[in-house]
Image (cartoon, rainbow, N blue to C red; front, side, top):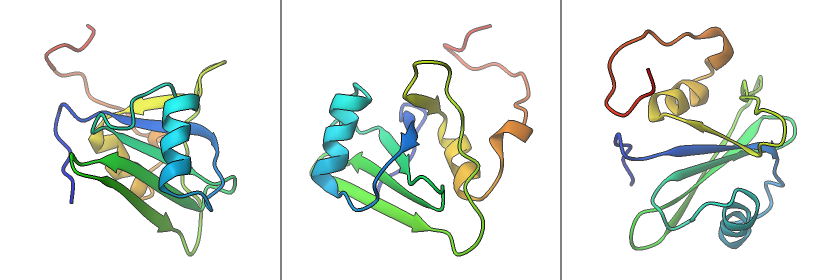
Length: 119
């Protein structure tokens, strides 16, 4: 498996993704649409139009992982990006909350020190 560390970044694609695509298609979306390196070890998260299915692409150093989740009821509360943005960066904790069904728009982060964070 793969683990989330403070150095692991998570990129959420804001548009709808065809869930029929696999490793190579997601690899191409990360490289061409998101403009990121698919072999970076970071997580790239995609959802279908109805926000009922997601796929995560990650490189673990020896190969690609594609993880998928399908909701039986409800929808994921997908983050919105600004004008002209095709991705939303988030922390690992936020991804865990998103996958657990928590609407991040209603959650507020407490102010605390984090090295490298903007003041």
